[in-house]
Length: 511
Ligand SMILES: Nc1ncnc2c1ncn2[C@@H]1O[C@H](COP(=O)(O)OP(=O)(O)OP(=O)(O)O)[C@@H](O)[C@H]1O
Image (cartoon, rainbow, N blue to C red; front, top):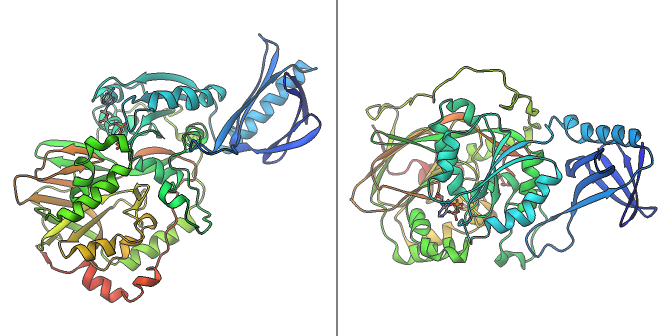
């Protein structure tokens, strides 16, 4: 079925194909636009014009965006045919893929996140894409710390997504606002989707794929079949419009009587210093983390804590094989029919109770040796140059916990080789476990603790996992990462048994 549109740029012919929209401009077939990239088509009986919008690959990717918005507006010969044609295309590109059109979006823009380009990027690049897709927008530019938290706490639950134009800090606030919502479970079922304008943007990297850093972009690289759009705000905007809800585990982070929600990571020692200790270098973007890492390795300070965990798996090879199998077998995600906007449930439920009390010690393991850092979390990437948790799964009900002993600078530097591809996981020195829960006790009064990149008091805490409590929007239904389930050639010497001895169970005592 063909539609002819006379636009100021010339005549367009649009044809519906099985999986794509075929666009001919001035009688030549110019483009095949896959359904995923078609945003809108409608005939407007007020201006008597046909409107078709879609995204195309952008030839000039200098700005770090890979898609360009095309809007065709023009007259048609037959209005009735135009109505029918537009509806047919819309139901093919939305309902045909289980996606609700014209999503209702609660957009939170942090003008001060990262290098302070959030407002500009939103108004110049992202908002036009949302408007072209005829999303319903409620936009707030956050004015202070805690603003996003307060909005999330009282959020109406009929939104299809909360969009954070920010870094990971604002997402942390939104989720903690949800935890205080009158109907927390309903709030947590509203998908959150990031537009990466912060400095770390770990969640965006995990959903959209790694981003090759400027340093590495010039080096020859193996062609990857995994997308690399983690910092691409146009792909992130498309994910908001066309992404599917993906359930993810969240963590309860408990410190004394205070319970917070964490979605990404908790870090202590060197890994916290490189984040918290480089706040004054925000202008550098995420390069500040690299500067922090180098400084931390030079200083080589012990992380004065005792770590205990309730392990579910300690064998690195088994974890790697399992994640590889899981990613291969993962089918496409279910349609949005369960989105909160259409949910009929009006039962108010509370947050899941805590499963582990401080006095529960059975089956817990304690690490006694001095450590350089403790890093725990979910989602493979924590920054574009560091895939810290390569075997992390979104919904396995477990948290990946790693501890680096205070051995030598040489070991630590060697262990960071291939960190952007997750290869540091195989470092024989690195202890890495999947746990149901873990605890940290400071052994000294001073130190840094970062939760999802935010500063928390350096005090005793416990973390446990709530399986599938959170919801994100994802283009792929799983993390967009590539990780080989075996050590790289240079580490082949480390046999499974070596890893077990060196990397997972060394110097531990079970209470
Ligand atoms: N208008 C504002 N002025 C100052 N701070 C703000 C404002 N709006 C929000 N914030 C705070 O900024 C903090 C950081 O936000 P965000 O996540 O956007 O950026 P980031 O920290 O640079 O990125 P990342 O977390 O990825 O490192 C949040 O804790 C939030 O409370």
